[in-house]
Image (cartoon, rainbow, N blue to C red):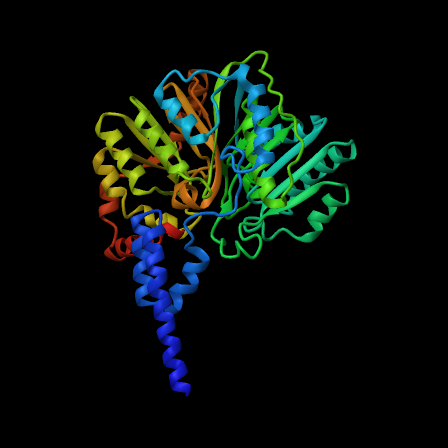
Length: 472
């Protein structure tokens, strides 16, 4: 009897492995991911089955967006907002920008200001100043929030805002901020601040959605000013963690109609986390002095398209003279790799800036498996030397730039909710170019000889690490 039960269990596990392998074949978003899961499920089902059901889901289900017109209440609010914003819309001057609009499912608006915030002190001075000026409401969203000196400074400013009657909505990712203790939340909630976790595995129906994250960093004050970029809340982002050393990052402060795009992304995330539709200001106001054009591009695993990957590919294809990219994690999918190589082959100055110091070992090792092909095609790879590079910035010619949360890796392309500001403005692009030129002066350029002379065991380890790219 015991042997019969054991044999039946083994057969059932292998049968489930076959069924799951078929599911992986039909639903995986990359061929690399499909092959990895199929081989694992057929050869090691005892280990691969639970891993696949917890980490192998290709899409994020249950997330409702107003832009997708899948909810009556959200859609009615969105229709009023889009009517209000009509006078602030700008016709895309090129099909390249029109493609970005289509990916974002958000419009190109005019009459915006966009100012770079370079490194932590400038970013948090600007953000805390904005919080102190709020009159109606504050929307705050971060991937990582720590209960350290910076986290407590944020807490202090939010409490002061709540005490003067400002509505405060605070959203954090349950995995990124898993070390945040209950005491931090109690200090906020006792002042009437709404604090919620973005739980990808919310409810029984979505219990297996464990490999997704909300990586967005958004702040909005009264629907009029907004912040987006690379910064989370922790002293390491101020360069005060000896493990990382100096921290190089970039954020963005926006004013004008485009802020409502940031607000809409937060509004949809809050709806997923709470089921609530909060009342906000949807009246667009142009900036009195600046006239930058901006498209806010939210992306995530609930999208029907691979929005983040397609956005990066579109930006690469639109470059004619210059494409400068900075990303702390550089393991792009095959489409982005091919686009980068082709851009370099047609004479574009393609530069990629990545950290010298690794933060995630698997990601760091994976890059060495495809860098030789990049270098041979003419892509220039630079490593930033002074400290940890965390900014996510792209410069396209002298005409456009992006600042946001997207890394060039599979997690940002397919597993994370991300958000990016695309700004087709020569004046803004000039500011970004000056900033990046200073950064490149603190980099060393990688050569093909450096890669080829690595010991064989390092090459093998790099190739093995690259196989895990779909779930890194």
